[in-house]
Image 1: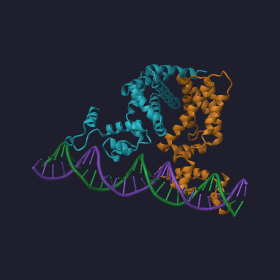
Image 2: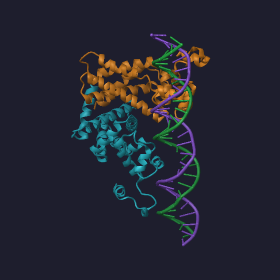
Image 3: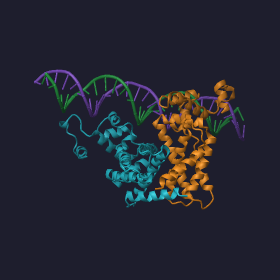
Image 4: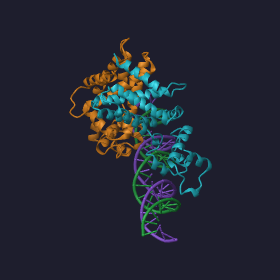
Amino acid sequence: MSVTVISAIAGYDRRMGRWEPGAQDRLRQAAMELFAERGFEATTVADIAARARVTERTFFRYFADKREVLFSGEDLLQTAFVDAIAQAPEGQPVWTLIHAALDAGAKTLQETRGREQARAREAIISANEALQERELLKLTRLARAVTKAFQARGVAPTQARLAGDVAVAMFSTAFQRWIEPDQTRDLTELLHEVAADVQSITTS
Amino acid sequence: MSVTVISAIAGYDRRMGRWEPGAQDRLRQAAMELFAERGFEATTVADIAARARVTERTFFRYFADKREVLFSGEDLLQTAFVDAIAQAPEGQPVWTLIHAALDAGAKTLQETRGREQARAREAIISANEALQERELLKLTRLARAVTKAFQARGVAPTQARLAGDVAVAMFSTAFQRWIEPDQTRDLTELLHEVAADVQSITTS
DNA sequence: GCACTGATGACAGTCACTGACATCGGTGCT
DNA sequence: AGCACCGATGTCAGTGACTGTCATCAGTGC
């Protein structure tokens, strides 16, 4: 991070090596800036590459496609969910495990990104359908990973799938409320509220 | 339908008008065939257009993009869900309304497509990530429509959102089981099973 | 010195998608 | 009949995302 900032401000000195290091980080940052300034569609990959002082080809060496630059490093969240489920004591009900996973996820999210950065990112994503599609794919992968973690604990396939979907729905809903304007409450607190809401819905 | 088949078999006679009618249906059918034969990526829009006896440009007049040709006519499902919620008697709990919406959706789905056609379509979609993304976007739109319908009945925003997500998760899960090989049970029956599973999960 | 590696550049190519304009049967009006 | 207009389609020239392939050359180890 500090390297990127310094080189971006002071310029890169060729004596330091053949190429300025940190190309991937520069690309990520350039993309975020340009998407925020002009929007996703109005930004070309060539624009991003130019701002990051590399070629377009290099962009595609680091990111599978133009959208992916906004979605790297979410393995952390998945790991948090899965580990929380796998490491919980034996014999606990599914609902308790979902709670544990959600709390672990909230903790990871708040460590990884602050609320303001999360807002900036969501503003970009919500302005573009293609980006929403990618986010939904990532969320579904998360849900399936949770499903797999439940199945590993012996939960029946259908229940495991539903547990994954419900957990992710709860997390997304709480997340949306967390980044609302003027929202000051903690993500964990909102998650507990959401959990109560789910229970009140499924009780006829 | 009969028009399409007849013209496809017998060829089109120019005396019948300037252009062979039913271009959109021909495009849909050509796309399904080619995606099933070669896969989505290995099929170009030019291929589809050629088989449907139109130009590539005409394809894009009917479908916003290459993926969309597999996802038209989903409004019916959404309408079924929303109407079922809107038209239910006053004072019923959310869980009962979800049941009603799901049953209406199941009925619509079984009328629109048979199980075999649903299987063929899912086989194509599950073989390609980009198509999965589009399907997830459609499902999320469905969930949001359900959310809106619940809000219109006075359900609080957060609960309404969760209700939409849970309803769609239940429908997707039951649908997946419905199209499993050798599955003979009815979609409605599977939905009721899934509903019981959700309740058992959310009960600690 | 010297071979080798790994990150990058250079460049040509494919394909999804778009805008602008041309074409010409059908339809209705006079 | 003649004529003007409409609407579905064709034609064509783009732009931009993404890919395959080969060249380059500082650093590294021997």
